[in-house]
Amino acid sequence: MERRAHAMLFPFPCSGHINPTLKLAELLHARGVHVTFVNTEHNHERLRRGAAAAGLRGREGFRFEAVPDGLSEEDRRSPDRTVRLYLSLRRSCGPPLVALARRLAEREGAPPVTCVVLSGLVSFALDAAEEIGVPAFVLWGTSACGFVCTLRLRELRQRGYTPLKDESYLTNGYLDTAIDWIAGIPPVRLGDVSSFVRTLDPQCFALRVEEDEANSCARARGLILNTFEDLEPDVLDALRGEFPRVYTIGPLAAAMHAAQGSGHGGAGPAGLSLWEEDAACMAWLDAQAPGSVLYISFGSLAVLSPEQLAELAWGLAASNRSFLWVVRPGLVAGDRGADALPEGFLAATRGRCFIAAWCAQEQVLRHRAVGGFLTHSGWNSTAESIWAGVPMVCWPGFADQYINSRYTCGEWGVGLRLDEALRREQVAAHFEELMGDTGRAREMRRNAARWKAAAEAATAPGGSSYESLGRLVEELRLGDD
Ligand code: UDP
Image (tube, rainbow, N blue to C red):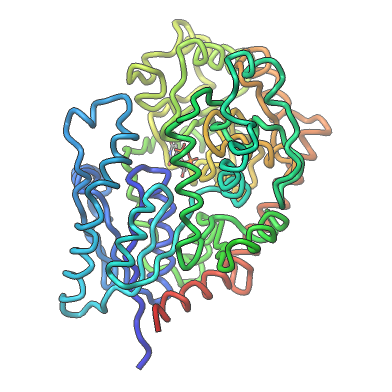
């Protein structure tokens, strides 16, 4: 009898990791893999209280479980809660994961766990998988170029590019130094390799964590990426020199869509959003002309200063075009949301602006009214925009967002880049250019349509991502046999 694979998936507990891992879980389940999706107890409770509760009930062969994250209430309120969460999980989460896998093995009706799938930042779970005695796979949530650049942070440090000697290096042109020796990556600015090169601190915690976490993927049986072969052929080629088993299964949003369309997709994504989605923005979009709206969002983590928010707001106001802007609580330092918008802004943009605290972004990007996306170039957002065929204005600020933005504007030809120091004049000019009818705008739209078609082809039956997912399922099924 064919052995049924049972994947235990454990993402780092934040939206940017949970969402893609959940999509992967759905795709595996649709291909016959038994799935246990592990949340932290804190998020599990949060989801249980919200609109996502229905999705948590699970289905045959798809269960949710929870393990403690070890944080105190004081840790949760701290500005460095993400660092505390990272350290706490490392310290205390391995044994509960092992115990959970053992409990699952004793449960009737479920096959024993045959593999662990983790996201980035939870490499401690590689040890847990070893203890359970099953192979581990890492779903690294960035582009392939983002992953390779993160891998090379150690070499950048060893070669003396980072940490920077002093503050002046941030503005004296040093970040424009060409880096032309990363295999698979075209010559790029040092500043675009990663945000982490900007540190002045030789012990920089974030830099060390990133390089350690990326390099620890070498211990996993396979690396899973939310990208597709045609999008990043050179870098994937180079990566396979180091990582023999790379599974490119993206864009995940497209793969989910294709799976549902073909009846291959089970019940579809559980929609476990940690935030409540504003449904009214969809009705507002319905009333707008095709391709006329700029959608603006900076993901789940970015924090802007009040000055940056004001430059952005007045730049958007100056353009006279319509826009839908996600201003989530916490977007501005001090946990503030829409109340941080500058005085007079809402009056100045009445009738052509919709402010939402959070929205169903994939649906928004696929809405016919949306013609552009002003984004922080987080990888999930970028991949969703590529799938939706929407050109972007990029304003990166953290981690892999710089290299994503470099590829979006350079290699893929679907974006315009804002300077690091936001200026309202440039915001207005890029808004106008992206949505207007210049030759450049038309070319970006043509490229975006091409990438949309390529993403759809990759995730359709017979496409590269579809086939790659099949190979992954096969590998999960084999386990350690
Ligand atoms: N997102 C959403 N609604 C919003 C804003 C963002 O559903 O109003 C989702 C978006 O679709 C994406 C994720 O949040 O899947 C953000 O991930 P990304 O990697 O772009 O950025 P991060 O939050 O990790 O910085």
